[in-house]
Length: 263
Image (cartoon, rainbow, N blue to C red):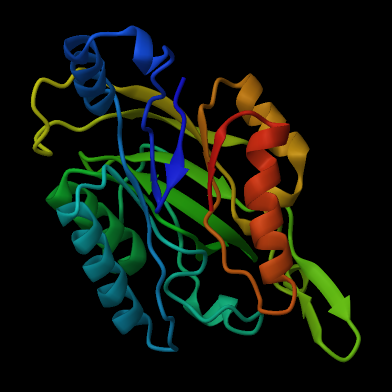
């Protein structure tokens, strides 16, 4: 059971016993054990432009910075390589491999960057999301790479964000995107060589959603039933509804579904 969420780092295990009833040596031993049984998730924020190549460079730099600071899992934002606009999803879209598939470097530059940075930094990368072209459809897709460069999860955003607030915002993802139909998770195993001493294998099942997927408790409940201890939702909220929904959902999701949520 993992607990704790602060400053984008999760996985600090709670000490279950009262400190006043235990010796200093016992407290120190349990604290060391808790540290070795923990892992860090970095949640990266990026300023996205209309320059896809520069966006990929900025994302790679953020990944390396997070890794240097001790992150074991680095999460990028939704649509980290493209402007978040329905008329831009098509021009920035690329094909995306399936779980266990191979990256085609020329046709899939975003996937190539994620692959290379996962291997270079010996970390897991939850690749925010990219517009994925599949036949005549476009999906909003999150791909997760493991430290060996393999694709360990692929999630197509299930719940598309359609909104119309007169005088403020009108936005319909469904004008361009198609919703996914599959639940997605991966089994995290803490990579070695990140500087910890005396650590043990840390394993954790992590469920994936994208942004508005967080609004629907049923998805989180299914993820929990599938054994997920942590839920990660890369997001890109608008300034009209984002401030209200973002904080509310981030607080209520772990309460309604007792699991750590990282958004």
